[in-house]
Image 1: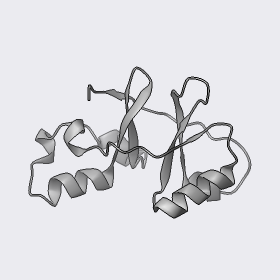
Image 2: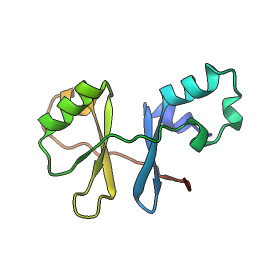
Image 3: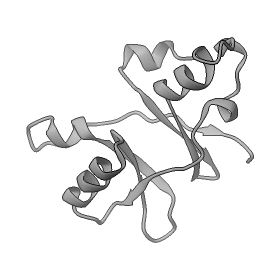
Image 4: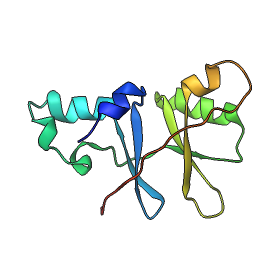
Length: 117
């Protein structure tokens, strides 16, 4: 698992996709809980072994307040953002995105990993 870029860019979550459809999410916490806490060698773990298969998401045309409410209710810091038409991943929104101040859109770099469930 390569994570140097994630640490440098402060990325704590990556969507795991297959054909632009989200099949899981992997977070720094997933790696810690499923790897380090279980005494496993994380350099030998696969993404499938560490990822969370339950993906919480919102659609791109929903109000931000709705996404914030879902994150609060489910105690998560990030949601996958899907296009309503074809339900493909188009981004990730985080609590810090909503509370970061300013109204300008910030560019995001996303990495996609493919896996077969």
